[in-house]
Image 1 (cartoon, helix red, strand yellow):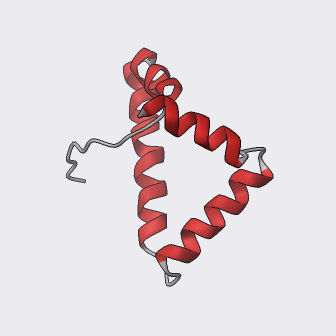
Image 2: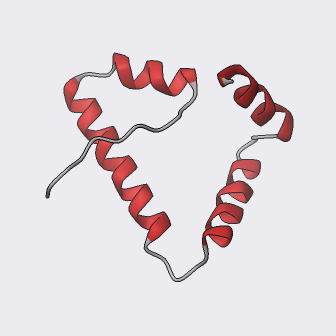
Length: 76
């Protein structure tokens, strides 16, 4: 499979985790991200539906509007 390098914005914690990972762990994280991005774009559902589903799952796992705002403010 051909690969390309892209840039994406992630939290500081996610960046630190990736940067401190071994080469093998990075390859696994790269594969996981590839799978998730592919799933999100290869669906019969609209992008809005995919985002709504991800949002619902994030709330179920404890992500609140306040926490999200703090994350986004810290990155800005």
